[in-house]
Image (cartoon, rainbow over all chains, first blue to last red):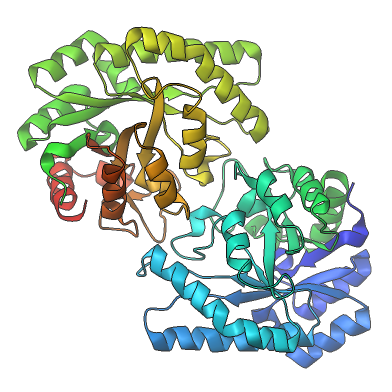
Amino acid sequence: MAEIQRLSLNQATTHNWSVKEAVEGCARHGIPSISLWRHKIAEAGLDECVRLVREAGLHVSSVCRGGMFPGVTAEDRQKNIEENFHAIDEAAALEADSLVMVVGAVAKIPIANARQMVMDGLKAIVPYAKQKGVRLGLEPLHPMYAGDRAVLNTAAQALEWASAYTPDEVGVVLDAFHIWWDPEIFHVIPRCAGRIYGFHVCDWLVPMPDMLLGRGMMGDGVIDNRALRLAVEKAGYTGPIEVEIFNQKLWDMPGDEVLDLMIQRFTALV
Amino acid sequence: MAEIQRLSLNQATTHNWSVKEAVEGCARHGIPSISLWRHKIAEAGLDECVRLVREAGLHVSSVCRGGMFPGVTAEDRQKNIEENFHAIDEAAALEADSLVMVVGAVAKIPIANARQMVMDGLKAIVPYAKQKGVRLGLEPLHPMYAGDRAVLNTAAQALEWASAYTPDEVGVVLDAFHIWWDPEIFHVIPRCAGRIYGFHVCDWLVPMPDMLLGRGMMGDGVIDNRALRLAVEKAGYTGPIEVEIFNQKLWDMPGDEVLDLMIQRFTALV
């Protein structure tokens, strides 16, 4: 059984809460870690976010998100790279375990080209991230997002890209929603040893109510989150486990009820 | 450029047409091959379907579909296997290039167990298929269907499962919609040489209007169908190329207009 000491609230799960509300929610419910999203950080102000998490004694498991490298023009791509520098600054200020990289995808750009743009973009930001002490966590996204969100779609591909750098520079972030279907996943996770920067849980609902906002609370779908947790632990990852759920019904619930349910499901099923 | 001699109408593309209408449509438009679905065969009667395709001089590229092996009880699974015997009989009578296997998935059954059930089911039907001269084509489905349609989700996995049998018994059916995102696909296709029983094209729309009925006509989305065609040809596959599109808007169009558009896009883009 996963202990609450491992739990991290990914702020996406309580979409309607500000950083302040999410931090206070974690404190009320005894959740020791949090993951912050950049648009929420922007709303609250970075300094205020740093103050809030420090005063609450919260650990920041990640900042979401860097990446989004592909762009039609060289100018677009340069702009995307500069945006990553800001993301790195925020992750550094918050002392996050890693900056989660959702690498991006643009429908107009052939997938092979987009993948090259991601590798180029990564190369352009690794030195700055290293200088700031920020680890970049490549998150493979489910293949159903390959056309418009991320051209990085399997754990093996993430590991391959990460392996161009040292295990302290670039690693992988494994989210059960994105990887549960992969016939190779239990072979790939052990190979990720030393590079696992984060692990996220949630569930895959059947039927899927919405491709983007249809993730489920653990136990409401078909994912064996525990098997995945045991695999990443066997590979040496003992850090925070984020619960990251994009789901309209959960977003419509009072945040404290979501946290109660999340803790119950996390300790029973993860 | 793909020539119309390679084109096969997968009957799913003209969902509202009976077998008779689809056969006559192919004849009118100079399409030499067709793929029939079992529920449409059942409506028309197998003998009548055999007569229709023979009189029209049509080649049957495949029968859709066998598979659907996982079941909660042993009785369910046995029933599923028996259903496959009927599917094999139909593919034999129609002299189809292969029986397409959509292997199945059941939300209640953990994915690892379901995968074992598929391998067991396949083992149970290969001898009968061989006896009837029917080749079984394993079709990997997009990972977004792993929870409720098919636990076979990559070309590499399909090849691995097929490799338990001879290249005349079990092969793979590669559908661009299901495999286009796969970072390994251009490495896996050459390894499939000698076992490619079919190749399907369509497109992946961005945004995806519907997870099931949101496939697009070639050219309306992000898939490079030509690159995939060239890869399967280089691997030795020179058989029919099916156009299989589940799309409500196309289904609402008159069938002849769909066929005109399909031929135009096929010859220009595949």
